[in-house]
Length: 178
Image 1 (cartoon, rainbow, N blue to C red):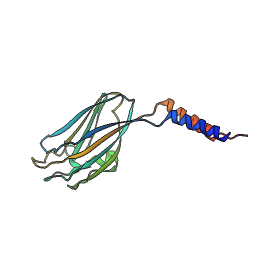
Image 2 (cartoon, rainbow, N blue to C red):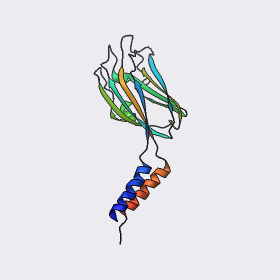
Image 3 (spheres, rainbow, N blue to C red):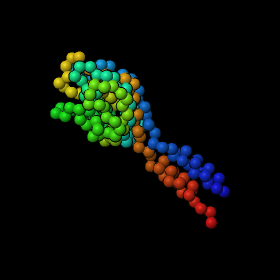
Image 4 (cartoon, rainbow, N blue to C red):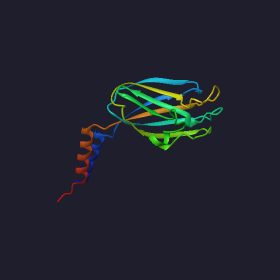
């Protein structure tokens, strides 16, 4: 009987599943200097409400006076935008304040970036524009930042039915036979 309860719970949890995600492979930003150079791509998202995203990138060593923390990321969805990185008057800020993980270094060294962000304003299916730019306006030509292998994974809010099925599976799994 224990096996039957375990099998039923496993089946319900499999059906319920975890929150799904959609991966956007951005690739390379190309070299971005301090005069407004930017790299953008448009992605179509067919999922539900977005709870956050994971950002993974290989940061190349910067040139000139640019730092990897000067990179600015903007994700614009059908219902709003999310911006992380330096803003006017706050160079090199916001990466650590808005996300968890290791923010880009405030220096020229390259490395691997892995960060998670909880978002507000990115909600629902539609067209999403992802833009990277050198956000520090005092960098000059030749002060470049470049990130390669950029991958953004949007995390979906699980549907209420999935959460209910997970709970039901837990109840079945913990049920004691008297």
